[in-house]
Image (cartoon, rainbow, N blue to C red; front, side, top):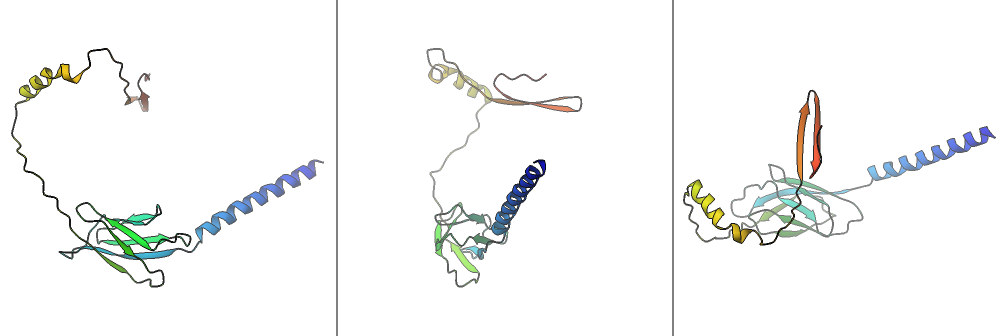
Length: 173
């Protein structure tokens, strides 16, 4: 009887291990379609680094490197035909991709400048800032008592041990 249980347990363990490794193997060897290219500024033709590139409708994305180059791996089940490009200071754009032509894509983003109103920065003495803050205490706090909740993190080293405390009422000893 013990041999039967030992054989059955070993058999199921081997079967489970085989199923797990075959699933991992199939995921690791799933064929990707790779889109690669370079992103440049349309006016200056200089490469743009850290441009966000994502597959439209999916959470698959990447960013360009210092040379403006990107490479985006797409699973066969992701059927989107466009990629979205966005960068701070530029108008976001979309580019249609051709899965049949694996050549590199050259993308251009148009600079987008927003003109803001002029501001004036002037020095103020620290005492004046404190006096202004004290004058606004009645406006800043309500007339009735309130209880506030806070969170903190504290790191304490005792000897060679490091203790970390989190929360609002924890104690490190």
